[in-house]
Image 1: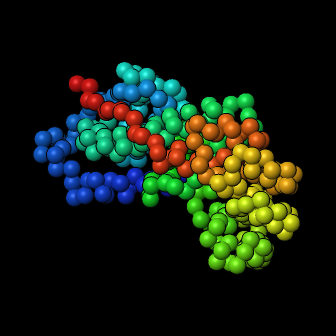
Image 2: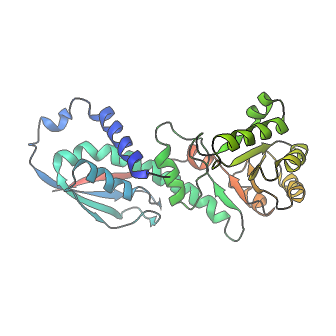
Length: 285
């Protein structure tokens, strides 16, 4: 995503406003502001590590003088008992940022770990894994970054960076032909840089999209198609568009879809079904 750091610092600022409020009174009541200390990030569960870069930026955002030492990097396999990083800074800073760092890294590591399970299934195939917009409000930035770390590819980030004509757009427009033509006219007038993707729900939809979409549409989504239907659709498309299979794809059947030679599979589950992994930030005294 463009301007990742700008969006990250905004996220950090809002998260700290939510958590610290008018003061971290638990820390203020028992710890002088000028005391410095050290903490280590302990890994308590196997998986794929994600969020180390983010953790460093969180500490440096709060205190630029924070000394951050990495022992592992984003995307590496992690084992329980290992140390991901250590940080030396003011104790007030460590205690205020502890939960924010852990919440980000635990969630990101869970997503990266699940994403890696999916991408391993795709090894040897041309098909690539896409994420979706099925994300946590105001946390999409880091959820999609975790997918990237796990080996997936980020689909559109929001409603603003691609036109995707889904079932409701098509139905409200009166049909797939009308939706494509209106989208293309809009792009020509206002945003020539926007790409258009169209969801198809049947082989008949595919035929219509192929007929009217050449030179206008760059990708066709094949929604809730079986692998056999995907194969038939790809024959109709004949390489004229990028292709994306979506709907009902999971770890058990993803290889069946990849075997069709579809370009992409999109799986919202890599984010919304991922479980956070266990990490802890502990003082070293």
